[in-house]
Image 1 (cartoon, rainbow, N blue to C red):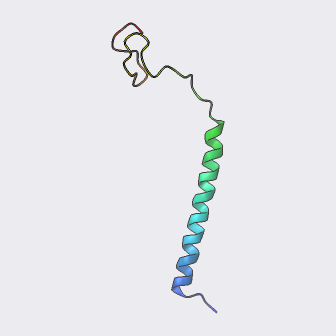
Image 2 (cartoon, one colour):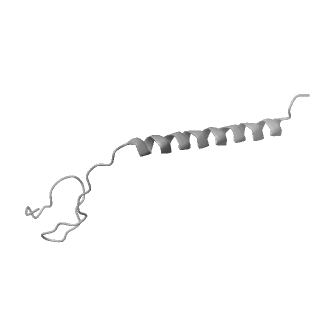
Image 3 (cartoon, rainbow, N blue to C red):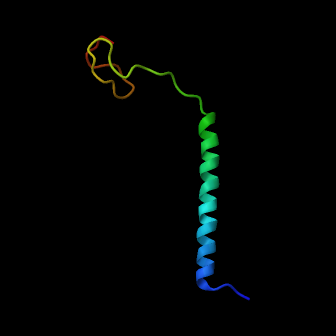
Length: 62
């Protein structure tokens, strides 16, 4: 007996959600394998301004 349209829609949604869960699980495993970069201070030790980005502080002392 063939499935009705609503049953097929429910099956498609469940399959999509399962696929998304597997992708998230694999992404979580791969994300843990990356080595974190060296931590740096959030604020400049000289002037106390927040450090944003990779460059040095605009005060030029740190």
